[in-house]
Image (cartoon, rainbow, N blue to C red; front, side):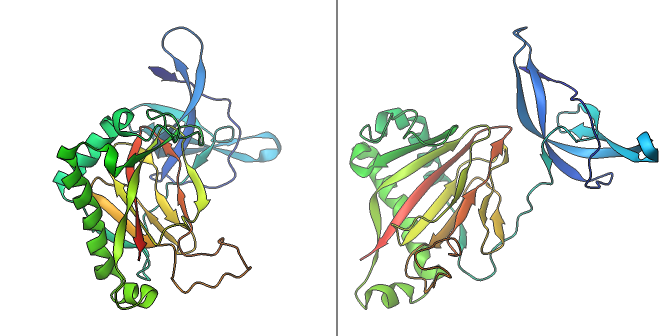
Length: 287
């Protein structure tokens, strides 16, 4: 357990009003007496704003922060990292498709995460901790053949559920891409992603796959939004929510040859704090 410490204060330049929500990276000290101090992101409400006279008659605002656990602290927010919370904003162009997944399939995804050390592809890094990526992010590949026979029907149903949504999201798209006989098919694997405190993934496009589905398994944490900066869209993780989008064959012409910076599928996994985020990433192909 950690105790919050009051940081040294200096004025904040950006005005905040009472009642606003903020996210603050607050220094905390371990209860075990070790003296360890680390910074943890918390959500808080600005309960009061107080201005004090400073040198040169400059007024210095201070803010009474009321944290979600009931604690309170005064701070000027000058020497701590803080931000206004990301607000959810859905894509209105139809590029990102949103649907809900049934509880039976969510429970199967939970089991995959719980048994990732058993099912994970051991040729792609440690099956418990995943491939060597950014700190705090665990990425484990699970191949269909690694799942016991008793679970393969659910494995296939999970993929097929995503395949079915492609036609609903973009009627006629598959035929335009691959011809009259083209079909959307699941890949031979999926990824289990776990983001711990501070973990994130910078802007990228999964350009090796025609479609991608992202299944959220929990919401008992803060942050962790999936953002599509070129669409002005951001999605809050909620259990059972699935995002589906296309990375290939979307008619996009890059402003700079070879660049994916302005691609509509460019997305960001925002930093997580106050918990652990678990998702399943599923890739689909067109053949």
